[in-house]
Image 1 (cartoon, rainbow, N blue to C red):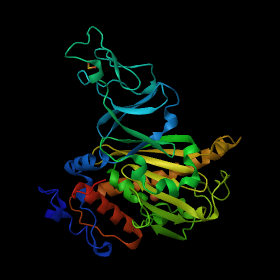
Image 2: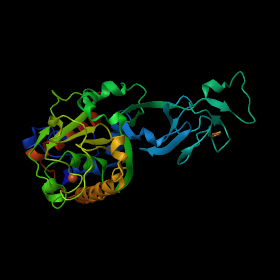
Image 3: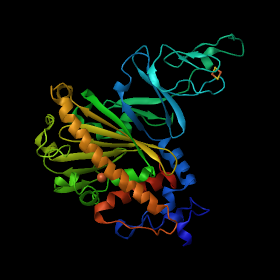
Image 4: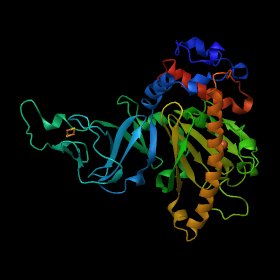
Length: 387
Ligand code: FES
Ligand SMILES: [Fe+2]
């Protein structure tokens, strides 16, 4: 039973030897990787603080001065649209004595700290320090907000807390090219919804790349569309920081046969034979379907909790249809049922893995991508692989 408990030498590579075997004889990650605070903190530092993370569609910031503030793995952040209409991200902590500056979301002319009223321009420069003057030892220019990397792709905002990280375009590799015919950059975001999950963040991401559960967990929902086959990620073909699968089926899985459908996108026939599902490391699960593009962000919150946030994108011509709201409401209703099935599955798995008496699991050919994903995580958390 010793192996079931979180060991003292958590990060000793020998703890993971059996995970690193060929997938048909490999074991799953030890259960404590889904419950350990220490393991979670190492994932946070080496994965979420090093890789690019999606934080939603750029339309969240429609105007000059639009801002959002939120917590990312324990780091308070502000994202704001500047006078030049550029979107920038900053650490939401005052350079004076550390207070959080902005709360919630909205529109502002300047960002003003509530503690001693230091004010910052929308590009982060310090512009006012009430009752305190510049001097030989204090220059305003040295005390702006700490900026982090932010870039756009597929209309979505992506941030990176590592100032030395490679730029987003090279990080994504061939993904923008593979998906360019969906023209997601020109789409509009028609929904953004949050879902709390009482499970480790990895469980939901693993589930995303696991086709094995679909006939069972989604027996009465997704399974109405028979899957002809799945293509699995091949790192020699798929170049970039993502893990993908392509699921082949006819038509859309968004609604049932008798329900009204959104128009199909303007895609060549070879891209209309199913859905392309990339997991973009670290926090984003995307789907490129025949009628929409979706992105689900995962926000870990300690080892046993996370929040999912899903955005759906369609062409403006689709969103402008007179009956769009009615049709899309059905997509959302169906999507929520499927989502809930996956959330329940992840929460059940978390409960089982939390038992201490749980042994190490195994993989089948149909959940082989979960093994690939676990190896990716081990390379970052235990090994020294660079992003
Ligand atoms: S902590 Fe922000 S102005 Fe003092
Ligand atoms: Fe699922």
